[in-house]
Image 1: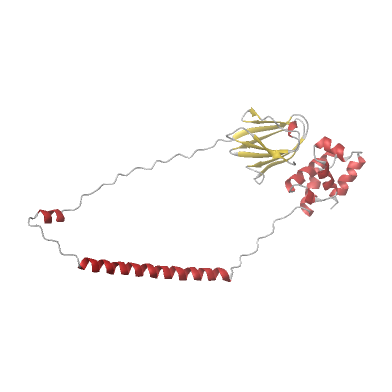
Image 2: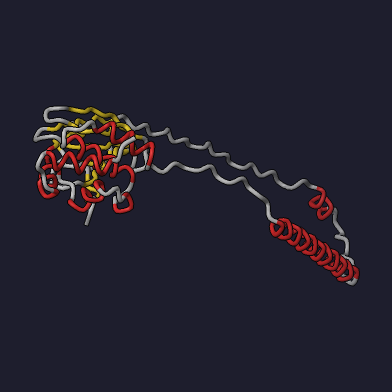
Length: 257
C-alpha cells in the first residue's frame, strides 16, 4: 500500500515538472492534476476518467500506471453494495384489501343493475299486443329458413423478416503521438472493450454492430476510420466520440466545459 498523491507529486518534482508543464504534455487540466496529487477524488469527473487520468499521469512521469490503478481499485474505488432484502409493508396489504372490497361492491352493483334491467324489459314486453299471424305460409317459411351463412375472408399475416445488422469494422491508430483511450460498446456504461495508452504508431481494431463509445485523452493524435471512412474534426482536448454503424460519426461532447 502506498500514497498515490504523494508518489505522483514526488515523481513530478524529481523530474522538475510543474503542473503547467504536465498539462501541456498530456492535456489534463491542472485542477485535475492537483486533485490526483492531493487525493481529492470528489473533484474528479467519475471513476472511469479518474483511472484514465491516473494511468496517463503516472506513465508520463515514468511510473508503472497499472500499480496506481490497482492501488486505486483496492483502496478508493466504490463497490456496489448488496441491495437490502424486500420487506413487505402493512400498508400494501391494506391497499390490496381495500381494492378487493371495492371490486366486490362494484360487482354487486353491476349484477343489481342487470337484474333491474331484465325485470323492466319483461314488464314492457308483457304489455305489447300479440302480432297477428300471416294468412299465408310465406311468413312461417321465411321465419323457419336458416339465416344466410356469411363466410369471413381470412387474410394471411405478412411476416416481415428480421433485419440483420452486419458488423462494422473500425481502425484506431496513434499517428501523431501517444493518447489515452477508453472504448465501450453502446455507451459510457456499456461493456469495456479497451482501456489504456496507445503509443505512437500503435493500432487497435474493433468490430461493432450498432454503436461504439470512445473516450480520448488527446483525440488530435489519433486517426480513426469506420468502414474505411475517415472520421474528421477531432479536437485537441479530452472528448467523447460515438461511432454508429448506420450514420456519420459525431462528437458526443468534451470532458470539461
